[in-house]
Image (tube, rainbow, N blue to C red; front, side, top):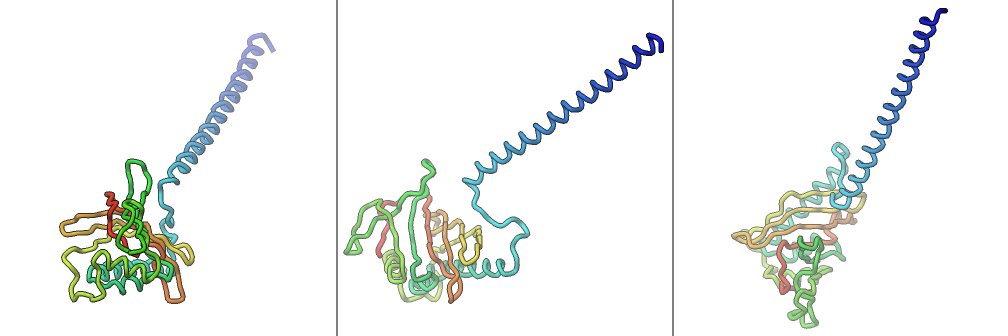
Amino acid sequence: MNYQSRRSLALRRTSRGAARWVGFVFTFIGICGVVAVRTVGAQSDDALADYVIPHEHEGDVNAKTAADIVAIDQIWSAYAHYLDSGDAEGVASLFSPTGGYVLGFANRATGQVEPLGYSPSADGVSGTPGGGCTALGHDAIVNFLHGIGVTDTPNKFPGVSKHVVVDRWIHVDGDTATFHAYWLGGNPVSSRGLYNNTFVRTPHGWKAERNEVLFDTNNPTFTCRN
């Protein structure tokens, strides 16, 4: 083999070696890029998990879960009708024996939920402004509703100040469920906020456990009796 032939063969071998090396480098970079993207994605998912309410993925709702969702949705539709027609006992009947109200103020400036209303004292009338409002148990629920004007004598027609609940979002997990929705009240609308509720399955069907009412505006003297 002459010099020219040996030189040509050496160049071809060098080119193939260089090509393999370049290919390895690009493959390595590609793998690192995928790992980096997945890492960033995982970090983003972790960050979003603090703000996104857990719920079923599309297509994961089976027939039993769908039936549970409908049952819970019906409870809260009944709740709005009982409340607007002035039926305190009807509202209380939708709760579990330990269930009831917890009122809060969604403080968007701080990103925190703060107490709303006042802590009731022994006389059921006075309290500490801004101390919070909680009414748990059947009697406490009825007494609380009496304090805000809901009676025990249902009206034939609901009042003109309708309680509107929209965008209900229900997540069922076994024998418990969470319920998130927006609400509007008054005529014209004078108050609004969020529901962050929980439900439990009982021998008598689904019942409301905690009605966490989060107002958009603070009212430290909201009437609270329990």
